[in-house]
Length: 480
Image (spheres, rainbow, N blue to C red):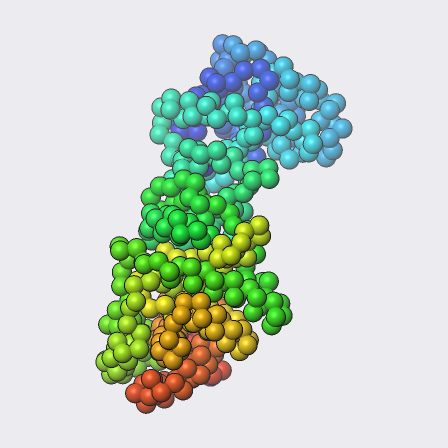
């Protein structure tokens, strides 16, 4: 589905002439777009390029159809704006012309089921720059693929194709139906593409490292885990396997079901941690993790004077209880990033979606992310079952693991307090403020562990996210 930028009226004319040279009787162009979007300008330029003798090409708004004899045979130019039903279209003879003439149809939505499947759909729209037009092309007949490519190659005035459209044109997904998907707190965006019964996901990560995602996905699938397969990639763009919509967060409707689903996720962690992390991953050192709580003091609490004390206190605690173990830490391992995959078994039943920020670190980090989820309440029975399953599945020292679990839980949730506050205060993403009370409750619950006693005086100075505090944050957020 190429999306082109026609940079000027001359560019529209040049593209129309180049496409006209590719046409033959039986070709149908369906031109959609609002009044003034450029449909008639395009049609007039194309028709004039095919006439052996120059003549005026009026808009058929009132005549409904204008017929021309061209060097390529008969050409019909129709404007269906004033028609109300398909019977009127049949009376015009337009449907019969589809088979033996070149047909250009404006307002093709009036055709309904009469639109030929082999037609080229051309959607015009205005852009911020006054003379520029956006043109989206769509087709199902594969014969158009090479013809459109040839048209673009010979157009004298440069036609800019969006990077995504150019990427998809090199795959078999260029003509797919596209449906935007809900994004996350990052700059990444996701679009589901559909071709008949097949689907794939277009992932765009303009500010990240799509190549890293692809490398880590291949690493995970190489271990027998279910990350998306990579179909195609270029800088900042990936076409990946669609693992479906079966997120654990939506499926966990009872405590019993939640526990079963979460244990599937734990089995993936057990399998992952049986192997060393890729050597290229950054290491979650105590210093790195301690520094990562800075936003809790600068954006959430606005107490930067307390930050140095907090990091200097937390770092030796992390070194003692949660030093890196060399396993792969996915970081955002929670119920809205994990899918239940039918037809797969064991650890492969857990579909993994978010791992491009992975680190090499301590094995407790992702279990904390799963069971101390800031987006949803996890039943205590589920948390204890997951802890038991992981500890027994990896033959880990239970006391040491639970200490690391508590320490990393406080570190992670302090970081999240700051990240969510920053998203609200700098980008106006105020929905993240709704998660602050639950995030705070996780910190309070895990501060009980004796390993965190030195941090208690510091945490006690932070303001709790009660209604008044959140209202104050909201008052300072940019309006969107």
